Image (cartoon, rainbow, N blue to C red):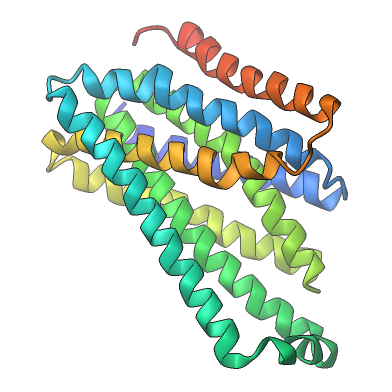
Length: 263
C-alpha cells in the first residue's frame, strides 16, 4: 500500500474513532470519564515518543544532536505559540470587557454558544491538521511507526474531543450542532494527512526532523496541557488510578509494537 493510502486510511480511522468515542462519552453525560482518559492518553503519548518515534528518528542516520535539538526547539516553539494564543485571548477579553460577558449570555445563549463553538472548531481543526501531518511523516518512515503514532493520537484525541463536546453543550448548542462542529474538526486530520503525504513525497530527507517535531508536539501536549490537570485531583485513590492508567497507556504502545512486529 502506498504512503498516501496508508496515511488516508490511518487519519480517517483516527478521526472517526476519536469523534465516535468522544461523542458517546459526551452524549451519555459521563464527564467523570474524561480525567481517566486523560491519564491513559498521557501514557500513550509519552510511550509513543520515547519507545517508538525518537528511537526511530535516531536510527535514520542523522546526528543525534540534530534530532534532540529539534525536539528541544519544537517544545520551545509550541510553548511560544501557546503563549501567543493565550495573550491574544486575554487581550481580546480585556478589550471587550469581562463585565459584559454575563449579560451577553443572558440575552442570547445560542449566539454565545455559536461564538464559543467557532473558536473550538478553529483551534481543534488546526490541531487535527497538524496531527494528520504527524501521522503522514511517521508512515513515510515506517508502517509500524505510523500505526503506533496514529494509536497515540487517537488516545489523546478522545479526551480532547470529549471536552470539546461538553463545552459546546454547556454553551447552549444542540447535540446535533455540537456533533456537526466536531465532525468538521475531525475531518481536518484527513486534510493534514493528505497534505503531509503529498509534500513528504518530495522531501523525504526531512522525515527525521518532522518526526522530531512530532515528538516535541506530543511531549508538550502531555506535559504542559494534560499532566497539570491531574494535579487537581490529589487524593490517594485518584493518584493510584492516574498512575495505573498512565502505565496502561505506555503498555498499549508496547503491546502494539509486539503485535505489529518490526515491519
